[in-house]
Length: 396
Image 1: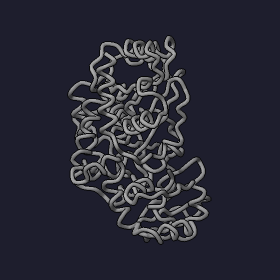
Image 2 (image 1 turned 90 degrees about the vertical axis):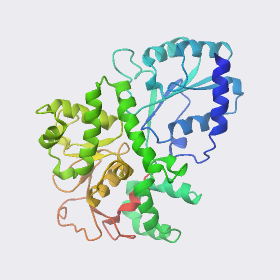
Image 3 (image 1 turned 120 degrees about the horizontal axis):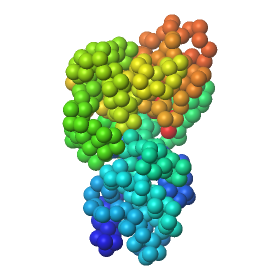
Image 4 (image 1 turned 120 degrees about the vertical axis):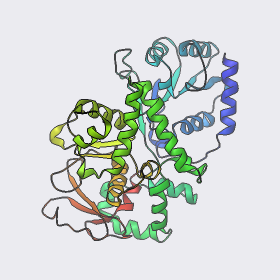
């Protein structure tokens, strides 16, 4: 059993030669006994795990990589136990959501074996339901697609700094001027908006959007049903929902109209549940006013696709204002608290109000609000509280 798995690991090591290290290489603490790397399909989880193992300065025999969606094994625990008996130290289990009852197996490995386990899985992965509560055992890290900064680094083969929100607020003119001395950021930003969120763009640029479309379908057809109980009709509805959100502007979301198009009549709870599945799987990004809390059964104020590339891969048409907001949200989600204010487009960290628009966007809607900013597309350098949209791609 281990011989076959090690042979597969050797082939994976030889095949993977991507040298760029993502932002989370430095931020993820891998010193715990049970660690989860959770993120959308295609954002680079597998690459990260293989890079980590290859760089790890221990003998090949003491580290083992397996992928639950490719290797057929009867028991994860049996593999781990056999590996531990041969003095194995670190076990990587990729795509773990594809393995039935993985929660029970991981709990058993954690409780019995002296082995460090790092697993990866879908963004929709649940670790706290009744089969086995892993939330108290596993340290889980959520990872995201390429930022605009990372996209430039890979494209140009250079290293660039990331900036905090506060640094952007106070120094955006100087930061923008320094970067514009080095690059044509307008052209790079256009390329990023269409193609730059998923690292596999650099593997085959010509086929990228086709592959991304297939990736979305795989998430809907395989990943989500592996976590949530869904029938075939529901899978079809998830695809319909994605295409309908594509063509809807966030501020004109009509839930009743969505239900009619999906043939769900007045099944509001069913629709909100589908939206939650897609939000967890990082196909959609759902934002609600702070007053409504986190209930999945409350009407969202805005529903976006998760990132701008999805608009170009999965939508027949796209509205520029929507794409701007999608980019802004995708750069802040998961790292800052986001909600929808009464005035403006976004309320961040319960402090800052943002209005996102084109180069002529004014402060009219938010002029009386403290800590308010206009985020403008189609400008290279801002002034005062008017900041270029592209610069928020340097937050990580």
